[in-house]
Each structure stands twice: as C-alpha cells, then as structure tokens.
Length: 256
Image (spheres, rainbow, N blue to C red):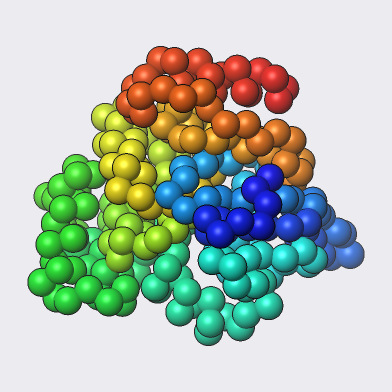
C-alpha cells in the first residue's frame, strides 16, 4: 500500500462495505488498503464476485463505506454528501460504469459532449473532445444514435468516452473491455495508454490481462480483500507487449 505521501492522489484505509437484505448480510469489501499515485495506472484484477465493482463504487462515492476511510488529494472524502461527491465526479473523477449508465434521451454525441461541458470545457472544446474520443474508439459513425439502440459492447465504449470527456485527473473504469472483440479492445487499450502517458491517474477493474499489461501495478482482489499488490516490471509500455502480459499472468498465478 502507498503510505501518506504528497504524490498520492487516492488512498483507501481499512475500507469495508457490508450489504444487508432479507435478513442476510454480505460483506463485499473487507478491510481494503490501497493507494494510487498521481499519474499512476493500476488495475484491480479479480474474478466475478470478488468485490471489484463495489470497491470502485466506494472510491468514486457511489456507495458509502460501512467503515474505513477514503482520501482524495489529501482530503478525506468518505463522509461527503452525495451533492459534494457529484461535484468531485464532475471536476476530478471520470467514472465508467460496468453497465454503461448512459442518458437514454440523449444521442451518443450529446452524452460525451455534455460530460465535457460539465467538466468546464467550452462548447468548442467539448465538441472537439467528443469527436476525438468517438473517433479513437471507432464510434464516430454512431454519434447521432440513441444509446439504448446500441449493443452493450458499443454502449461500454460510449461510457468510457463520456468518462474521459472532461479530461479528469482520475479515471475509475469498471470492466471497460468486458465483451469487446479484439479490435475494440485494442482501441480501448490505446486510449488508456495515451491518457496514462499524458499523466492521467487510472484505476481500472478488469479480468482482462491484456488491459492489465499496460498498467504500472496489479492489485489482486479475492473475496473482497486485497490479496496482492504488485508492480509490473519496468518495460516499454506497449499495449501489446508480451513481457508485460507474461508478468500479469505470473501475478495471477501467484495469487491463485
């Protein structure tokens, strides 16, 4: 775990989330400790049900922790109101949901452009950013489409474009390549690698070792607990680099 440090952007301390329904209690996150430095790219790897999505929801203020602390840029944020969290997500945090969460009565283009405008971009900047992202992700021809009419894989890419539209300092992405074919996955990898090279901090939950191969660190989650937190070996950060993919597979092997 990263300790208290001036370069730490995001930090979680002893984070726990318990859900209760119909008299039954489930603990989705169990005492998680992790940190993310400014400009760092880390992935949270884990099987379905390991708590990855819940962890990201906690770190992005979409769920309130049962116990523990969350710090963003040196400020404790776990006790903030939903209104304050909403402001943070507009200004500092880009959040990509696993199940899209797009505004259905807006076009694909409007979903992305509005996110840029809410982040403080001018109309001209927002339009340029929207065009850039949709083109990068192979979605330019769908700019006028209604999100609800798109396949889930395309909705996911629109959601990623929207999350990145305001150029947030921190990107939280939940399974951005789940269900994508190889061509679409490569487009997402390239976009993430470019954002990382530009200094964006990224925390990404995934089961895909191809995406993880572009990261600086792999955080392995098992049954809601951080089972391992390992930096990847220094290597050229090419999204198709076999050395880094091998390193990710080794991390997974050691975790299992």
